[in-house]
Amino acid sequence: MSILLVTGTDTGVGKTLVTAAIAAGLTATGHAVDVAKPIETGCRSGPDGLDPSDAVTLRAACGSPASLDVICPYRFPDPLAPSIAAERAGTLIDLQRLVTLLRARGAVPLLLVEGAGGLLVPITPRCTFADLATTLAAPILLVVGSRLGAINHALLTLEVLQSRGLGIRGYVINRLAGPGDVAADTNAAALAAATTAPCLGELPWLADADELLAGLRGHADGVASARARLATLARDHVDLARLRG
Image (cartoon, rainbow, N blue to C red; front, side, top):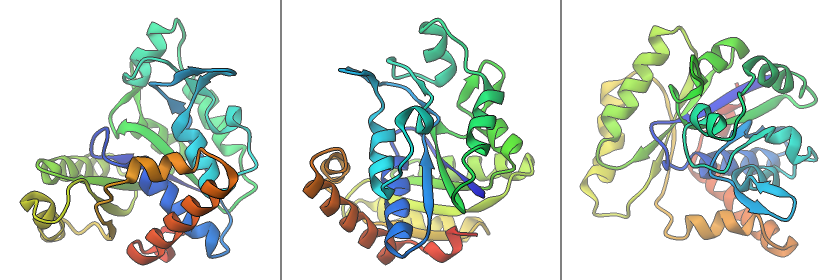
C-alpha cells in the first residue's frame, strides 16, 4: 500500500474538494483507492455523535466500505488546530495509534490521507502533520489555494518539505476566485517559475463547490451525480497517473 498525505497551504484552501475529486477520478478509471481523514475538527453534533462531514464526503467520493470510525478516529467540536481541539475536549491524540491505524489499511494500493490545515499544524503539542508524514514515509500532495498570498504560502511549505527530507508528489492548484481575479490568474505561472516541484493540475473555480461536496452527503442519486462530476473534474484537470506513484 502507498500512502499519500494531502496537505494545504492554509486552512480553507480546498483540500477536501481536491482529495474527493482525485478519489472519485481514480475510482472511476478502475483504480482501487481508499481515504482517511484521521483527525477532523469543527464537527457538529449529530444523532450518532460528532459528525465528521469531511470524512463522510471522502468516503462517498470513492465508495469506501470502511466505517467512519476507521476513516476518522479522532473528531472534535471546536474548529481549531487538532492539539488544541483535543485539549479542550479533555483528551490527547496518540500519534503512534494514528500510524498503526493508517498502516493497517493495506487492502488497497493507494490510501489518500487528508490532513487538517497545513503541514505544520500541531497534532500534539510537539508533533505536526509533517512528523506524521515522516513516520509513515508518506509523500506529500500540496493543495495550493489560489488567492492573494498563495505564492508565499506554497513556497514556504515546499521549503519545509525539502528541509525535512519529505517527498513531494507535486502540488494541485485550486482556484478560489473566478476569472478576472489577478492573483488567481497569475499564481500558476509564478509558482511554475519559482519551484521545480511538479504541478499536477489546476482545478477551476467552482461557484457551487460547497453544494457539490454536500451532494456526496445526500441521497443516493445525488451522491452518484456528485461523484461523476468530481471524477470528470479530476480527469480533465489533474494528472491522475502521476498521483498513483
